[in-house]
View (cartoon, rainbow, N blue to C red):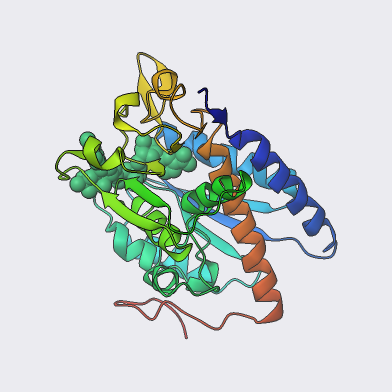
Length: 297
Ligand code: NDP
């Protein structure tokens, strides 16, 4: 068997073309995504430039707010508060990682749930846990789900093994697959005998950041393999899956690059458009109201 490739670049392009068409109908007004970039991490800059470029292609105004790596927590919280209250901004994301001296959780939690197009706030995470349709779902898991749906498989009852339990990929991925009636196993660095678990998986979604860790001997014949990992090995990009080895045994597989990465950006833009639509119909009705909330409401 040679696996069919799920072409994320192609799918993302299709999603973006549809978005562009929908956005062009609002000629008086366009969605705006604010991206906060703190410091000068080179990889973050590349990711932000890419988001900005794709946003422009679909007609989303991307406002990049560049801040010094030495910015204090209160100053950053005030910036987010201003964006929360700015009716011309529909989505807000904070590019991660943040410099060490900033409390990542406190910063993320201060984003208004209405504008949390990354889906990282406890409010949207809670909605996802409730399988509530109002949840903004993190872009990467949402992109993975769209890739699985693109191949037309019935997810009900499938055993999905998620490798990684981070707040931005593994955990929301597990919840999303559960919401689609998969039987989900979430694994992590303390999981004992991981290959014995992945060998029972109908679907593997790997997001552990370990270059080419998953081999053909770890999977069963015909498994569907989604590789979220973006790693560098000998100067080249690669995923968590040993692509060449695994593709002879899997039924479907995603490449790196050109797989989940482009889908993540497309889903972020789709969430921004959704936020725009909701705010047009119902001007802001939530604030973060969290601990140390800086909201003016
Ligand atoms: P994190 O480092 O936050 O999380 C990695 C997770 O993998 C942790 O839960 C960790 O376990 C687990 N893990 C690490 N090593 C192993 C191992 N040997 N076996 C099993 N589990 C392991 O990473 P992210 O979730 O942010 O990202 C994961 C990967 O996905 C990275 O390569 C990243 O670059 C990529 N990525 C790609 C995106 C895309 O758009 N394609 C978007 C976001 C991320 P523990 O919790 O025990 O430490």
